[in-house]
Length: 181
Image (cartoon, rainbow, N blue to C red; front, side, top):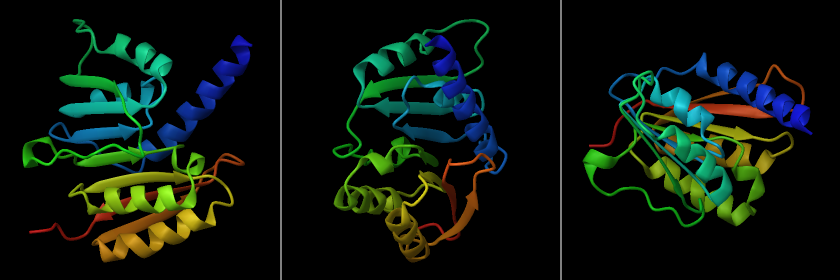
């Protein structure tokens, strides 16, 4: 059983590093990891960003992730926090100071209904983030269609690419072309 989880984590690590090669996290960025699970992608982002927040619906996974929050002299991140939230009811911060520069939503959308997916994607694309990274499972054509329709309207360019690993689906890295005034 332990080997199964190790293999699953290795697959997740490979997918994350595949995405990470295509994005840049600056030392001044604020990162939101929606559906962060045990938080290891958030921890990796926190090595580079000023602020990193992760949330997940699973309390047990967040309890594991919270172990990374404790300050330790060998850790290089500034602010890292985890919380329990449901992606369907999450409200983005309203103040400019608390808005996110990068929003990650990896491996979450395929678990939702089509109506929930649409509502969440609209909320995400309405945020003033400079970069949004999404993942759609294989055969999730409705997600692909929604992203390719919403992104240009919200002034994002979309880079869609297929994972190098079989059965891992498509990734969408959406860069803001023009910032809202």
